[in-house]
Length: 606
Ligand SMILES: Nc1ncnc2c1ncn2[C@@H]1O[C@H](COP(=O)(O)OP(=O)(O)OP(=O)(O)O)[C@@H](O)[C@H]1O
Image (tube, rainbow, N blue to C red; front, top):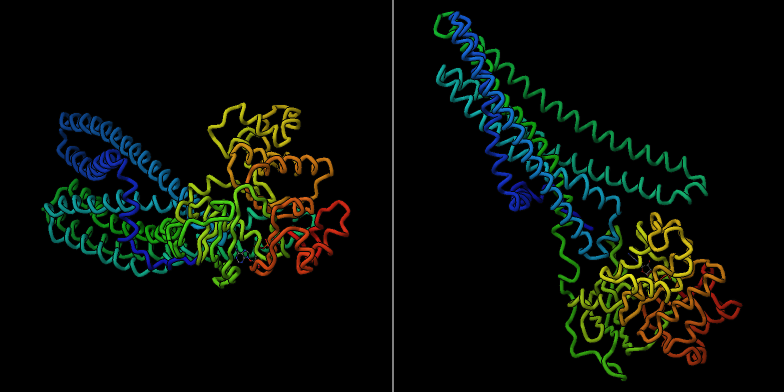
């Protein structure tokens, strides 16, 4: 997937999109902004209180001191309550925005074209959803609250100072823009570094995830040291990037602090001179010095915050690269059907018209596979697809499900175009992959996954038809048994039967089946095969076939080779042709007593 370079999406582009997530929570946001004034009163009030107290001490008036103490204490309680409320509203708005933003990203990840998802690492997607999305929403906080507040604080402090000494106040104020603008020198570098850091973190997360998932293989092949070295190497690269970012942030901070302190000392000297000349009270000098900080430091803070915004922009770029992708099926790059696809037996259950498809590899290179495939399947037919490894069988199945989009041509299911009516056509298909994917949760959840409104009776009936009821009833919690990550507590055969139960429950008229080749014991295989036979009954079935019995019983066999249908017909007819099918048959089936294709062979019918 090609990502936009960091500089292509400006703050002006990203900010309104992020702010749109605050619209449903605008009241909370407005309250949080208004309550910022409590912070302002606290910050300015701190200086004023000191001025009042010192001048009251100097005037030796006990009554004034008592009054000032009571007023300050009451004001302090009110302000602290307001600040707590401000934090509350700020937290609520930010967490809800973050929730919405992440949910949108989660939803989008399931809508973008499948080949884009395939070209990304799942760890990368996880990282974008967790860290990057959080950073991007945090940016709103920085801009709305921190930048906004600092500007306000600076403005009010300046007004207060100006009424004491306008020239010194202007001097204090003048240093601010210099500090802020000099900080911008680091922006590009910070943003670039941050994008690289987030990318590297995502890669590391992916590596960790992959290593944990493949722990069995790692241990079996004693790869622990190799992987540890790889991890340490990648971690070191990340550390280097983080070190660079820390140095730049340090430079940003120290250069700001240097200019600020220089101006602060100059102004403090000037106001002290004014006090010596008798024009200013001690309390006023103290308040002046404190408020001068309030004029200057907002620029340092803003410079820092702006640096943080650059980092967050790097994260936001990665999130928007996904959010701005077109949904699958949204880009129509295929020709419209000329007429409703028909089969000699009536309307075709599945029709492929002039399908061209090219795989895009991770490195962006293209591998053309199909160049004009035609196929019409009548309702009730069972089609067996066979061909050597890499001939395009899985790609064909994924095209039929709308997981891949053809570059040219049209695929229709019962006359409806898959590309045009993706949801409707998908509802008419059940795809049973070779390795079923089970989610952690209960057996019931996994069966009902394909039909969330299924009743208890329907779930039990589906399990019975799939030959799964027996083993489920023997489990300690029956249908409520937890099956672990990817169904790790179940055997291969049991996992397959759960997947078949799902397919029964879904009850779609078209079945795409990738027959399992995993080594099941004879008994499990017999039960799975019986369940599959029952599932295929009265359904239109396209089966990527691995067993001779399936191939023999199919109404038609399609032989694929390098993305082309080179033979088509019944088992007997294809044997008579004496072509690729006959060759595959002789190599695979004849020598195999149990009629199951040996996966390890050089040429396999899959
Ligand atoms: N995501 C992808 N990106 C690039 N090329 C791909 C991708 N998926 C598959 N291919 C290529 O497309 C060709 C067909 O692959 P496909 O998986 O459809 O074959 P197959 O017949 O199902 O193979 P097998 O029986 O070994 O599973 C292969 O050359 C494969 O390398």
